[in-house]
Structures are given as C-alpha cells and as structure tokens.
Image (cartoon, rainbow, N blue to C red):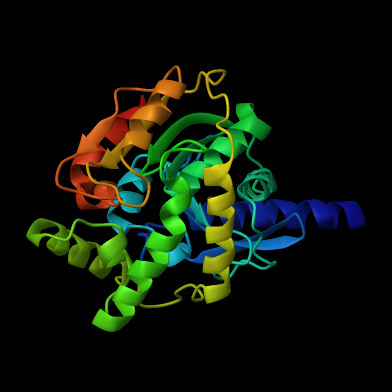
Length: 301
C-alpha cells in the first residue's frame, strides 16, 4: 500500500507540473517555483512551449528574476520552453553568495540536473556568459546551443575593469535617482536614453509576486568574482563544437565589444558576430526585436 501511495503521489506531482506549464503565462504572471540542489533552494520561473530540451536563461551581475526582459522571455516562450533562475544567495534563492565564477557554474549544473534535464540550450547575458563558459569546461555535454550576449572570454580585454565602472555608475544613479542600468547598459545619447527608459519600464511590468531585492553584499561578492575571472588566463574554447550565437552593442563599456569578436573566434562553430549600432552593453535589449529575429530561428532550427 505504501508503494502504491508513493506512486500515486508522484503521478499527481507530474500532472500538476504539466498542467502548470500548459497555462498561458507571460513573464509578468508566471509563478516562481523552487527546487533544491547543492543544499540550495533555487528560485526559478518556467513556462512556454514544452519540449525535451529547455532554454535556460543565465542572468547578469546582481540580477534577480525580475531583471529578465519580458519581451525576450515571452518571445522565446512562444517557441520554446524557457527557464530563468536566481544564482546562489540572490533574490529568493538561499545560500551564501560565493566569489567564484566556476562555483556559480557548478551551482547552475546542479540546478539543471535537479530539474531532471540532461541537456539544455542556454541564453546568457553578461556575467551569465562567464558562467556558461565555465559550465562548458565542467560538463560540455550539458549544453546544446548557446547564445552569448554582452559578454567575453575569461581574461578578456577590460573584463576586470567592470568593478570600478559599476561602482561609478551606481553612485551616478544614486545622485540622479536612476537605476544604474540606465548608465551601465545604454549609450548616453537621445536614442540610448530612450531605449534605457523603455527597458526599465518593461522590468516593472510584473507588479505581483516580485522577487526579493538583491543585497548590496551580493553585488560586492559577484564583482570580486568577475575581477578574479577577468584577470585569470584564457580558457581553451577551441574544443567546443556547440553552435553559438554572439551578440553585443557597438560601444559596450562593461565588457568591451572587442571581446565579442574575440569570443566568437575562440569558438569554432560560432555564427558571424552580430553587433548592434549606437548601443552599449544592453544592445540586446535595445534591439530586442531585431535580436529575436535571429535568436528564435537559431534556437528552433
């Protein structure tokens, strides 16, 4: 009787999960779920067209679940199953934020396995791209296709300088009553400022069940991890045959645009680099419509 009861419970859980995924969610309404791995309770959001291989979104520095662009998430969800998650110690995810990019990659691998997936596609932005590269070095078969936006290789030009730049623009944001991403992600001209305002408005579209705010201590530890990683010797990425799409803005101050070209050269199966004009680190958000015209076919073909 006990075995039958456990079996029925498992069947019920699977059915509940399937029913939840079939609800017509958007990123502003999809519920936050939790799964345990590596002694961490990971917060994540999962929705979209179901399939055996989901797209996992790897977020940027000091970002929680509410920092994912709804336009990009919803467009991918209409074609693929997409999952976003909080890193260790970020937002509603438990644990103490570490100071190592490779450790973040190990956490991500544990999270993916805890969800029951043996292979995933990845879309990674900024620091998420650093973590993705370390994931490849640890477990290369876990990834199938990869999109790398606003990022660069380990030891890349100017990557370690992100610490001073970030703190500078945080203080600028404090004095001007703006989100630091207004300065960090976008060019400071009329076009860039309009794109920044539009992007930041999109991030506020979710009004209920928002994620926990990111602590200032998390920012400091992640910046330390990036500085260490940026000063480390480059990894050999030539052994990875994964299809890769690299995109960026033409004036990326956080991870200089030259790194996008460098990264693509290091990956033998990378498609031609896409660089958006008159845009910065957040070029993928400023040109989200153009980006999705490339990203969706890449992820679905």
